[in-house]
Length: 511
Ligand code: XMP
View (cartoon, rainbow, N blue to C red):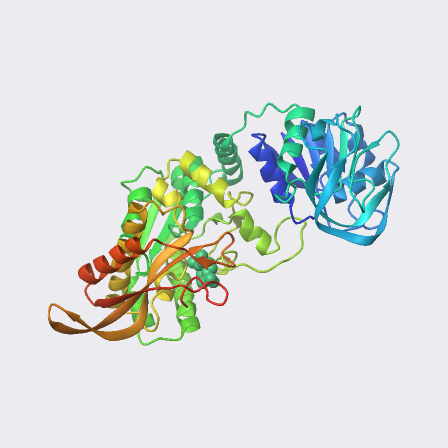
């Protein structure tokens, strides 16, 4: 076990993630945790994170000096490095210029254990106002940059290491190696921890927390809620009830696929309730064309349906949510760190369900880690590697009024598109792709007859963060095949467009 002490930096979970990537188990705790608790846990190493404060100010987060006297290796990063120096008698002050961004760092101590295998000059990611003006007694400077005399320092004998930059950020080219050197080298962690151990730990934690209580989960069929369902099922079996609302705006056969995995015929031990609310949604959406109003109706209707089901079940002890770490950061709920923006997937239901506590078993994981857990739990690959699908579903991929007929058209066109993308081996290369139904009808000719039918738009984007995106370069033959299949196989369509728009100015979805 390695403990990450959170001092409010933005990259804290990234630190934890990098440690996990070294196959070492780690847990994050607030800097407010009592030293006695740390002693009880007896970690093999401790990492102090960055944070927004100045360690020499009276009310800034700090930690008792005793931490550095336990004989446990400590690595301080950014604020953590400054705090280590400050507490142990070095000097930290405000720098004249803020150092921010990619910076060349020069390694002064070639045989430093944390820089083993790292070149003498390498690129690091800096982000600080304060700097270490003088190291604490017993420390030597092990690296510097043009603006920062102490980019790293250490007291090798006491196994205390301070790094001013951020090795956890990918811009620090050899950052992974540095963290590896610390946890696997200095701390001598064996590196036998894997995702199956996460599952084991999480299952044990859930059992302790839930006891013989009842848990309710809204299962959407997306990756996160599915993995949460799998994990909870493994931990508590039928104490878990999953409510899956089929709003009739899912992709083709998707409702049945979710039911096949989690329903009574599937491999998971839980209570599965499928609510077929298709008609209800179509009635509510009849005649509505304004995008935001459509979104609102779909969202509110979900709450209504869920609320009705929850009432039937009665009071539960826990409401489970598939919140994952990126949702937590974006909402500013991440431990000690500051608010960035609120997130649509966090919150929402709690007001409408009678429960005592929220349980979020995936809260510390990144998406790719959630997928690994999913595979570990035996959730089928096509579900685990599913591309993002918006909550309002096809409702925002049908421009204008939503009708059952239009849903059928877009479902069929989308299924063909997905099949051909998979056949072309592009499924994991393109980050998101789908068919949408434009509200445009135009004249065509088919078998000597005039047609007046809808146009389908194909969308495919390459993106890392879904905040910006480029249209993917799908080979023309693939697009042509999709076009010809859609027009031949999907009644009501006589034209197919490919959307070339990047984001911005477009969005990925159509509404
Ligand atoms: P846009 O259209 O905003 O989409 O470029 C960016 C990403 O977010 C997804 N998306 C949503 N996901 N609820 C969700 O859970 C929503 O209301 C929603 N709207 C968009 C979209 O699929 C894309 O991946």
